[in-house]
Image 1 (cartoon, rainbow, N blue to C red):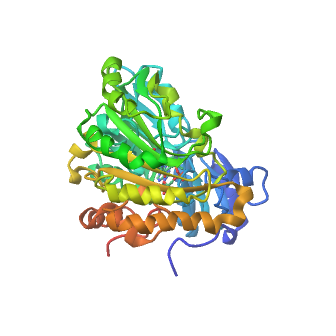
Image 2 (image 1 turned 90 degrees about the vertical axis):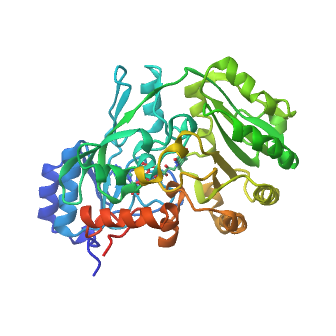
Image 3 (image 1 turned 180 degrees about the vertical axis):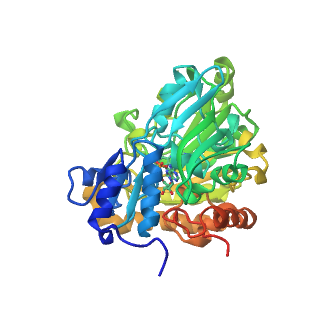
Length: 469
Ligand SMILES: Cc1cc2nc3c(=O)[nH]c(=O)nc-3n(C[C@H](O)[C@H](O)[C@H](O)COP(=O)(O)OP(=O)(O)OC[C@H]3O[C@@H](n4cnc5c(N)ncnc54)[C@H](O)[C@@H]3O)c2cc1C
């Protein structure tokens, strides 16, 4: 029998009651008021029915939940922001350790640091940090959870200037697979800190993080510049050298799709487009000069201008609404080569949903200068992270296979050019894909760490790295 695979329904009621008495947060069992809301996560495709959701109020609750799982050998998962696309934060019949109510953020302006509990979302962290003119490098959608994003790496608009989220992770408080509360920092449990910097949720339940924060904004030069799809190859030829030679202050994202957003004027809605989105986080005048060559290519819409950092951070929120249906695949590429661009344009012509899209994050800069062995993050040398995202509405569920098929066909065409994958964009795709996110050396080192800190693989409802034998 697999360890830690029992259902909560097998736990004797007096034991459940004893657990409830020492638990300060909220517990949800099937049939309880709030249970369905508590098992709802970002991807509306996911419909898992946990046996018990333990919404923790403080680290002591997390310890109690881990010990309860050990005592009854329960199947266990860990949920924070609930944005993992594969829905591994929920487990059928088992125990969900839910951090989503642990929401405190404290910014220490003098030290330039952020103290963040595991249930905090990116938007909450951004708002608290910006109040003091600071930001922690993280992702590009405000409702994403800080915890899962950090543990896998964390790429976004500040990656090239200040590195990945994990490059700014100074310390974490962690409940181990034995139920102990420990600190992971350069001085205490440094090997655990190394694993948390990219190794995902394999090594314990993180209850809080301490991050380095940097001066940003309040204004950046940022926003979408739209070109018709048929001009993509030409635009990408100009983009290629421009982006490659740009200073670290510039990060760009490319988005290829049918235009659809509140900021798209009526006459351009649903038009197939290639969107170049620069974000410049340095002096404004310099930024305007840097983005000028792309603006001069003659776009059909140009919204790249000085704007508040917080506003820019929310620009994609309306494209990835919680509860819609999603299927993702992802590849890391050295470059947006003409071959890769041709494939994306070709498949966009036959895109099956007006909400689906390809998005490419430009990498490099500060993140690429960190030594591969310093953190568990596996893909520092990639030029671009490219996500192929099918998006459709719950009422279109009958068309699921069509939308999933569109992503798979695009993935099959791009995969021969790929150099791996970013673990946070993986679906439930099996061990080889997890290994390819890290590369053999880092993966083996992670498996050895796992064997030391979670030898029975309690934490395995994740992008799992089984313990080395
Ligand atoms: C709309 C959207 C936008 C995104 N944008 C970006 C982006 O710009 N940049 C980027 O890098 N990624 C991005 N991602 C990917 C994101 O980093 C992952 O989906 C991440 O797992 C989300 O974390 P979460 O806490 O919200 O998710 P959850 O589903 O709660 O957690 C995902 C997994 O992380 C682990 N985990 C979560 N919390 C803890 C914890 N406290 N302790 C231990 N393990 C834990 C668990 O294994 C869990 O299964 C995006 C995802 C979505 C859905």
